[in-house]
Image (tube, rainbow, N blue to C red; front, top):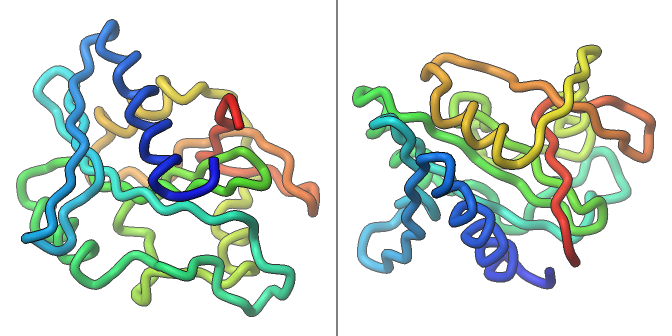
Length: 172
């Protein structure tokens, strides 16, 4: 994967595979309504909005922000407008170098829509470790209550930290 478009194409293919488990999804491309999430996912009449972000690597310095294009005010506003309906709202950050992605509840995205490297690692670090595949994580995201915080998954990072909600992807 070279870009966020490639990452979204990959996500679309993976979401399509979930139709066998009763999921439906829609890839959104809306140039007229800023902030509308990249994907909508439904399962048993429960929906989730997923805004994806893609980065090549985490910065070296701990104080450097991880994303060049963070979650915007419009994207966070869209999540907020969906809250009263009870829909799940998630950011999904893909990191090319580690072939992994982190699923983050919208309520836990920082005010400025971005993390420093240190903040991101600290946010994801968690002593519990459970393994889930992509389909399981999306299913949990879809049926999660609005107030749910972390789904936990084990994944080694360069510093040897275990992570919440980190899912490896297949392919390049």
